Length: 178
Image (cartoon, rainbow, N blue to C red; front, side, top):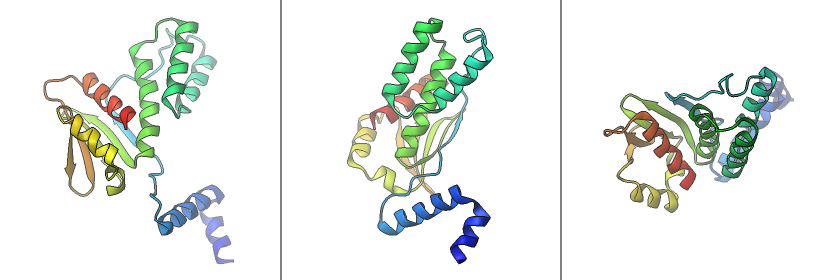
């Protein structure tokens, strides 16, 4: 009865997610962030000059939001090229951001941001960075990023004379290689 009351207060879907999270935590399995916050100052949209039909553009936004794997992103990119011609950089950025969100969430990254000082990926906890593959990748990419610790682990991508698009691309490639 008490659980039923909690379920009514938060809604069934949220209740199931909270319950799964609690069970995962008690079982020692990593608890992934609910979603990854993305705050990137790059052009990422579908211009109406590229996809003039509103319905098709909305459907395309939905398809992009549903990307979960690199192969899906590649297929969508190829389809866009076949249907509409060369894919503008702002649409490519949008596809990359959708994939980044999925990859980041899978590795326990809560937030990805790109500001005037550079890029940053903030991890939920130490779980995401304890994988030897992650540590090896950080070592191999030390010219473009570094690991920092404050309240939570962070991967820093400084501008270092690069433009924002270059830092964005480095962050994207890093996530793809995880």
